[in-house]
Image (tube, rainbow, N blue to C red; front, side, top):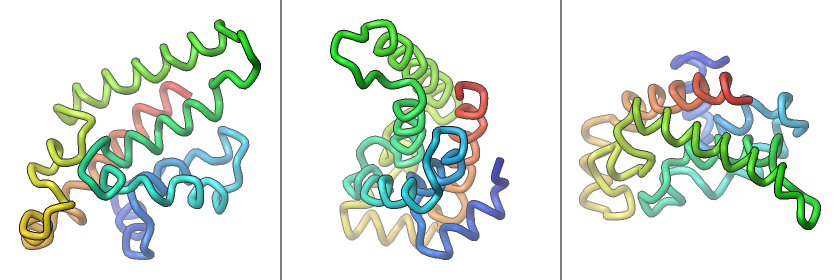
Length: 143
């Protein structure tokens, strides 16, 4: 599992929270890290609208890749994936107070004025690595 320094290093390379999470567990879900990062590329920062946290969407993609249903009528697999999803969301919300990016950061990064505050407070380099670490720790238990 990645530590906060390794997460921050990936951020400095231009990867977003969703990419770091899905990339970190790629081998456990049958994806190569490059494909995982491509799949998760548009989900960072709550899809850049401050919606569902990118660490959450990356984790849910991982859960879906491992446990999701792909055959019509496979209710057992669907139920298992939904149970894993709900367990992740519950544990993540317990740690972070929410699964929504703007609620976790306290600002909406899609608003330029609020994004300036996020940058001034260095939340992307101080708060977000902890958020990603929490997502990875929870995901480790679920996968």
